[in-house]
Length: 368
Ligand SMILES: [Zn+2]
Ligand SMILES: [Zn+2]
Image (cartoon, rainbow, N blue to C red):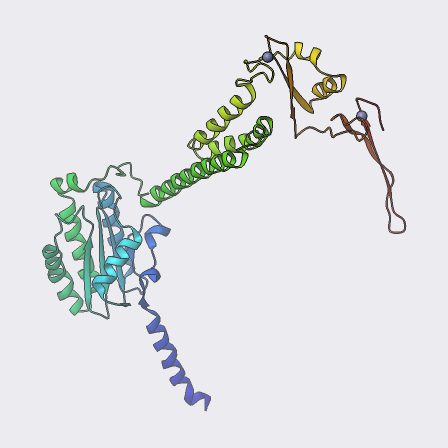
């Protein structure tokens, strides 16, 4: 029974395999993307390996000399109408240099008995539809009829290469991204750089959006609280600027000047309304309490002292340093409370718990 079924199963498998050779646009192997020295996609082995190698060499030389990109796809069958398929595939692969659209796609669907030559706008003048039609009629139709796919394809590619490499044609198709140095690297690098530029623009927009959000959020807040809010995002925006090729620097600079204006800008006297003067760091200790002086020395709070020259009114503005190791003392409330020792006096084991002794001390009042 099984023996009798075997040939039938074999036929079914073969049929399924044959059906798999029908390609949709995204299923055609993009050999050039994987290996920039290859231009011929021949997944069904319709062209002989020698012909494929010969065609790749021809198209490689053409690209080096003229920068024109000719891709050739030879498959058993395709989904849909060959003209539409060629247009879709041409667009999907982005054949040709971006600046002058000098790409050409030669599509051969063997079982459909159809060949299509699709050209980018930059080579349309050199390879008009009528001429493409004659290339197909002269090379492909007679050879394909004899099942000689090698000669038909190579003949057509040689005709196209001949037309694109005349000196006049060369001047027309040469891209400013030309790769005369012998490198065949092309659209992939451009696309990656473009994607990075888009990321930079995104980072800039994100930075500016954050600044606008902060401006709205801090509206009506007291001046020093506003300063803290903007100061928090300053470092982040600076890092953003480095990653974003300097573009987000605009957001950083806006925040930098907002912070500067909030902290060092004009302060008006609460008594007489005249502008006050900032007392420099050395002399401002005279105006600070003993606790404030210690806080400033341990770096937990930075005090700005403003004084009115007219009536002697002073205003002391604290800026708490959030990255400081000092916390607020529960007794004297100065930000001078910190860990002086942290040790394990008894190691924990599987049978008993351990002991850890942490000692915190206030530099200001000595509370421990
Ligand atoms: Zn005053
Ligand atoms: Zn204390």
